[in-house]
Image (cartoon, rainbow, N blue to C red):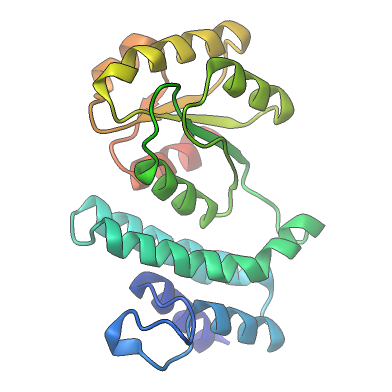
Length: 222
């Protein structure tokens, strides 16, 4: 059982999605995260055990390597795809309540901004760590953020912006959300942002990378 969990972790870290995937080259022709997760379940390994002992540690390693610039965006995306292939097996267990979610995380790129690579990385990293993720997409208005928070009370909210021109939009969205939900936990991220900017607009935290976002919500927002 332990060996299967190790293999799942390795597949996720290296970005081996399934048997047909040719990436990474050294694992060509080997089963990927999809097959290994299915095999583990069929052998009696619990879904929550797979999540806690294989997937979460693997995505933690990926996040740390990315933060330390030892992995780059294309490699992280492959790891995230491998993680998602494992998650297809586990989602029915989440839906039935067999696996308890750590919480709900709502995220979107602010209005006027159509960039989503960074946001998508955060989504994948956080979902792979046991959170339910509600991705509102790009060009998200203040009203849409507020409506999502009404639909999913108690959620953590993430906002992303890549353009300097949409930093002002982010400031407005944070203000609008806080006016409706004064105690709402909001984290913000994006290339032009800084901790000082996040503080100035009333956000609770600035995440410079997906791993920072994950570490913060795990420690502060549950």
